[in-house]
Amino acid sequence: MYYTKEDIARLISEDMPYFDLTSKLLNIEGLGKITFYTRKDAVVTGNKLVELLCRELDLKVNFKEKDSKFLTAGSKIFEAEGENVLILWKVAQNIFEYALSVSTYTYEMVKKAKAINPYIEILTTRKIIPFTKKIALNAIIDGGAMPHRITTNETVLVFDNYVKLFGGWDKFFKEFKKIKHKTIEKKWVVEADNLEMAKKLIDIEVDVVQLDKVDIETTKKIVELAHKCRRN
Image (cartoon, rainbow, N blue to C red; front, side, top):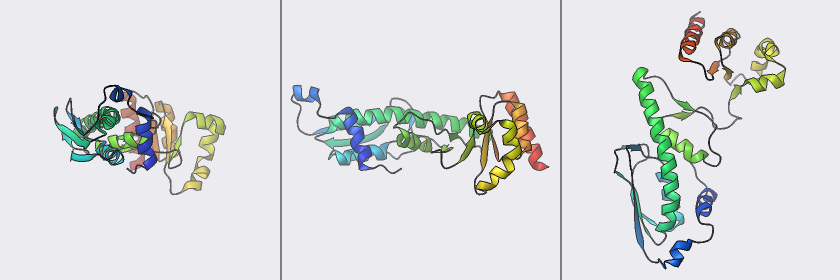
């Protein structure tokens, strides 16, 4: 993941746009050392970003664990020293608490899924907390998943709201093959929330049927139907 200088500056300025009032009042100056540990078993992520923060804050990095590594509770993640360790503390704490939660949850999900099917992939949604995209993407990748898509311009993903504005599902079914030829190098993903809609989408040969809030039994039927049609 590439972080710009503006990314780093924004992270620092969000917490400390001027100065640390507490440090000033306590007259805290001089060199210090800070070490981050895991409270629970966790998958490491965010260390590349924290290292860039250290460069900006003129801190020396003494230790940096490898991103994507699984650690047991109480393991060291990162250590740095210098004059601005208190600034790093507040910013890096936010990054680690958020990002390690995402990477570890993702890791557990991937582990459970692959125990059933080693060829399954976990793909994450584009929708995230605003201004956290790079940190979140790093976290899910370190946890073993991949993004489903990152922006709206890279894939074709049709939801009901699109179709309503297009003129309705009947028009979509009728004109789908003609529309699909406009993007012959792209796969068309269309969302369904029930078995009947999934059948119609399979019949017109969309590339991917994306299921939204569909129960397990219905999902099984849709998967069986899709595989049957592909064999035929």
